[in-house]
Image 1 (tube, rainbow, N blue to C red):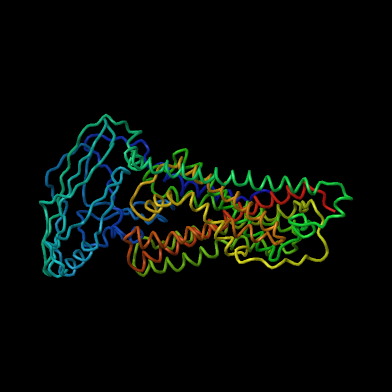
Image 2: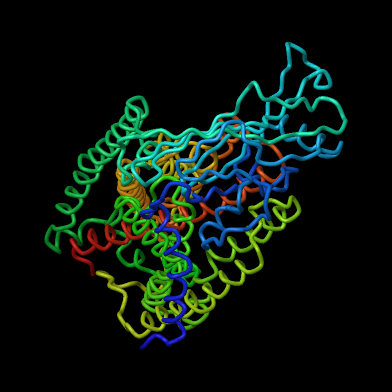
Amino acid sequence: MEKPPHLLLLLLVFFIYGVSPVISDGSDHRYKVGDDVPLYANKVGPFHNPSETYRYFDLPFCSSAPVKEKKEALGEVLNGDRLVTAPYKLEFLGEKNSHVACRKRLSREDVAQFRDVISRDYYFQMYYDDLPIWGFLGKVVKDGKSDPSEFKYYLFNHLQFEIFYNKDRVIEIIVRTDQSFLVDLTEDKEVEVDFTYTVRWKETEIPFEKRMEKYSLASSTPHHLEIHWFSIINSCVTVLLLTGFLATILMRVLKNDFVKYSHDEEAADDQEETGWKLLHGDVFRFPIHKSLLAAALGSGTQLFTLAVFIFMLALVGVFYPYNRGALFTALVVIYALTSGIAGYTASSFYCQLEGTNWVRNVMLTGSLFCGPLLLTFSFLNTVAIAYQATAALPFGTIVVIFLIWALVTSPLLILGGIAGKNRKSEFQAPCRTTKYPREIPPMRWYRRTLPQMAMAGFLPFSAIYIELYYIFASVWGHRIYTIYSILSIVFLILVIVTAFITVALTYFQLAAEDHEWWWRSLLCGGSTGVFVYAYCLYYYYARSDMTGFMQTSFFFGYMACICYGFFLMLGAVGFRASLFFVRHIYRSIKCE
C-alpha cells in the first residue's frame, strides 16, 4: 500500500522544520572584525528546580533595543528554550571595558521580585554563537544570622565576558559575575541600576571542530570514568552469575528432564508425569485479555525499537552537549515513524491468538502508552501555564504535535495493523492444547505474582542503579552526560539480565505445574520499571534539592511515564524470551 502524498509531504516539512535547525547548531560560523555575533538570553530559574524555568525578561531586566525572539525548532520548544536577543552586544574581536548595556530604575516591586529570586538561587542561561553560558543573578550575605529579615541581598549588575577565538571563528566563551559590582536590594526602595559588561578576546589554537569537547570532557574525568567502569563491572558480574546460574541449574535440570521424558513409550506409560512435562496440554492455552497482552507487546516492541535508534544516534554523535532539543526532536520523529511496528506486532500476535476484533486491538495499541502520556502532559502543561513557566507548550506547538500524531503516527499504526492482520500466520505451538484447562495446584506465597515480580525486577535494577544516578543528575540537574558507549553497554546488559531472569522464573513456574505463564512473564520482565520509580522517590528526597509543587509534579509525573515505558519495553523483552524458551523445551520432548 502506498503512503498518501500528504503523509510524505508532512514528513518532508517536519524534517526540515524539526530536525534541520537542530543538527545545524554548531555549523561553520565565520565572522569578520566588528560583525555582530548572536547572543541570545534563554531562560532563568531556580538552580535546584531544572523544570521550573521562566523567560529571561519575565524578570525586570532592561534592554537597549526592542527584544526579538529567535525562531526555534520543535525540540527546542519541547526543551523549554525561549531564546530572545540579549541586552549585551558582543561584536567579533570588539573589546569593551565597563560598557553600559542599559539603565533602569527598579521600582519597589521590581526590587522585591529580584530579592525573591536571588534568595532562591536563580541562574540565567544564554547562548553565544550556540555556545552555552550561565551565571547567578545575585547572592545572599547571611553573616552568621538565621533570620531571613536580617540577610543582605545583592544583585550582580556587571558581567565579564572572556571569549576565545581561532582566526575567524568563536571557540569558547566564559562569563563571570564581578563581585565588586553589586547593587544592594535589601531595602524596599527604588534603585537606579546600570547593567554593565566587559569584553575581552583571546586567541586559542583549539580548532572549531573541537570546541564542544570541553563540555564532553566534564563527564569523562578519571574519577567519573572509574565509577562508570565500576558500574559496568558490577553489571557484568551480575550477568555472569545469572548466566552461570542458568547454565548449571536450569540446563542440568532440563537435561535430566529430557532424559527422563525421552524414555520409550512403554516406560512412560508406567510412570506418572510430573513437573513441566505434565503441562504440555495447557502451556499453550491462550491467555485471558489477549487483546491487552498483544497491545502491550506491540507498544513494548515499538519502545524497544525507539531505544535502539536513540542509542545509535547517540553513538554517532548527534546528541553532542547542548545540541538544543535534538533528543526531543529525535524522540518525537522516531516514535512517530516506528508506530507501524507497534501496529504490526500487536495485530499479528493478536490474530495468532485467534482474536477477531483487530481494529479495537490496534486502537488499544495506539492508546496504551500515548493515553497515559497525554493525560500526564495535559495536567503538567496546565500547571506550567499557571506558573507561566517556559515548560508550558505554546498552542502552535501542540497543534504541530497533534498533526504529527494524526497524519503520521495514526496512519502508520493502522497500516502496520493491516499488514499484521493480513499475515495470516498461525501460532506455532509444538503441543496440542486440551479442551479443558488443568487445575493449578495451590502455590506458596513466594510463587505468586507480586513476590515473583519483586525477584525479577531486583537483579536487572541492581545492574543499572549506579548509572541511574548520573542519568538522573543529567536529566533532573545540570550535569552533562556524554558517555553513551557505556550507557549502551549498560542497556544491553539490562536487556540480557531481564531476559535471563524472566526465563528462569518461567521455568520454575512451569515446574510447579502453573501453566499461566503468559501474563506472568510480561509482568516479571517489566517489573524493573517499578524499581526505577521507587528509585525516583529515593533520589528526590535524598539526592536532590528540588522543591515546589511544579517541580515535584514534573519530576514524578514524567518519571511515571518513563517508568511505564520501561515496564512495557522490558515486559516485551521478558515475554519474547519466555515464549522462545517454552517453545524450545516443549519442542524437545514427545508431546502426545
